[in-house]
View 1 (cartoon, one colour):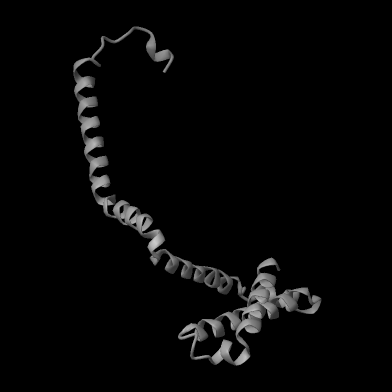
View 2 (cartoon, one colour; view 1 turned 135 degrees about the vertical axis):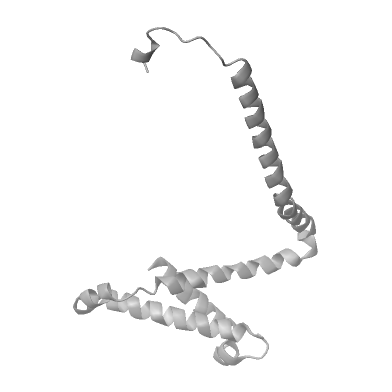
Length: 143
């Protein structure tokens, strides 16, 4: 119910800001009108689901049908549009750091492999040289 309310208020705010015609078919929004239609369909399906959920006669029918929650998750994934903000000059250093970290993941993976192999080899060496002990009588009753 919370997300449905938030999405409805978001859609109402966009329509009031842009107007109905501009929101659904405006040329200034570019390909944004497709996402506006998508948002509207998701909000409408969510409203239908909420209304049907609160009606006692349709509750049993809804239990057998798939939920529209998947569409809400897809809509939340659209929040990735915020990543476009990172293209601004202010975030240039952050993007440099992120790309450096992403580029060094392979090198870091090989470094971890080298560390594990070296540690294993040293452990085997010490196990064979120092780890040899004489058997102790009566120890088997404890282990």
